[in-house]
Image (cartoon, rainbow, N blue to C red):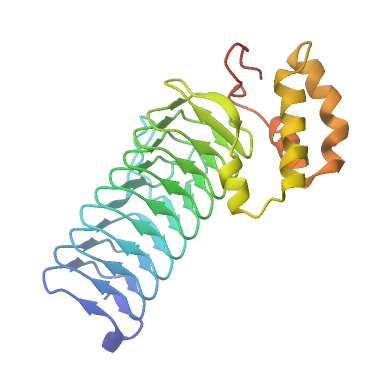
Length: 275
């Protein structure tokens, strides 16, 4: 039978279908016509409003609110998938709005899709298989991740934007609306355009994170030297390595660039993307 940690504290609508083996946390409400699979684990004080579908080995952290027609743990949209039981992990305090889809992982990709805490996923946004999504993200309407993407903390992805598979987006990035993101985006970057180009630093987000005026000036100077200085990009990248010790954010950007694997680096207009 399903395991309910405290029946008196959990409310389950009689029209919901919960398979034997599912775990429902204390204080969680399961609304009308929800379908919860046998391997699902739903944390305490969650609210599944209605028509929510949870399958595969999906775990949902405490305090999440999930709106109608959301589908979590559904099979990866990958031609390599052969029906294996794989995982989706969602952190605490997430808001998942109508018609959001988050797929379980693939065996080849590690078998797990991870979503952090306190994410806000607006209607019709999508997290593809094997993605790793950080904390405090905001995905606007129809923001879409291909498989194997890595998304840092405090990232905002604008409406109708799509991120190519295997792409990395660093922490505190702002992606504008209606963007196709085909290259890795440095931490603190601001990208925009039909095919996303780097437009500068996410100054608004950094101010919200309490960056001082002095730090912002240091980072702006570094950004100008790296992306708009004279000579080839590789030469400029080599020259600014010495600035890593001047600010932790600069060190984070340089480490991110050094860790690149699958995708070229998203650069400003007029510059060719670099591996």
